[in-house]
Length: 317
Image 1 (cartoon, rainbow, N blue to C red):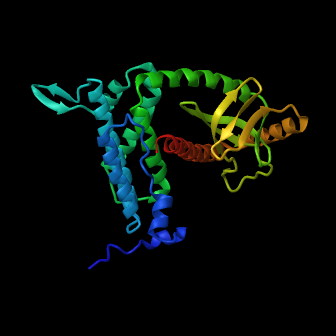
Image 2 (cartoon, rainbow, N blue to C red):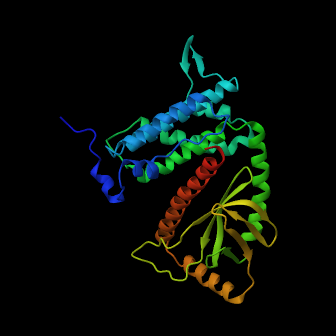
Image 3 (cartoon, rainbow, N blue to C red):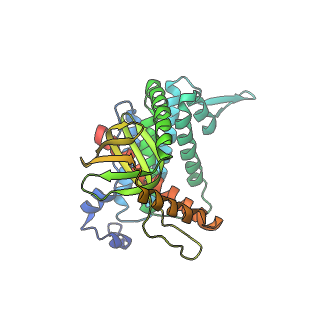
């Protein structure tokens, strides 16, 4: 008889002190605001238990993601019902379940919900991938943790009211213009108790209520191409509270309480360092640039998802 309560040896790599340590560091708790339905919260709780029991069988972590994606499908349908959107369609006198793609489009039928629609369709694509497997594949927590974080974030966004989404669109337009104007300048990051550094650009931003999530690309001091790839670009993501933006700088407080300031620098040496780094990037081959871009996008998605999740955890958890 198999011992189903024997810890999976593959977790040894992480050097957990035991199951409690594993649960604390690996299980992604559901952190939902008061407008998220009880059915959704209860369904997500099952995912937490699956993640916890993956301690005994690594592949169960992938099953936790599947449960999350089916929970999101249920949540979309609950939201549709809230809005009076039909879940069934009639053809030749018979009723059929409507396709999820059509339900999403109806739920997000306003311009101010376009961002939410994009998130939901990405999750739908992932759900379709897992719903129709062509073989036994698994990744454990490496690839799936980010997707699960993303599901929690999307569930919270889905059940925010229309007014919240309207304000989100208005604020992101304003901030987008401000950041675009700044990113055309030479910028340096000054974080309290850390060394200042130059950035090549502001890469991406997200706004949750009055909380700014900002990803920036540092200018590297040393860089080289290995084989045909270049993965030297690093992404730094900051969760900025009480932020302020003007024509010269972005400032605010980080989650750890440190002050941060991203400001224009006119120092000639800084301009020279940025120019040299950009010249290097421009010399990359198409293959190298593609690897660099994919690596950057992958790492940015992970860090931004984490930052948004920790915002929800701090405010509603």
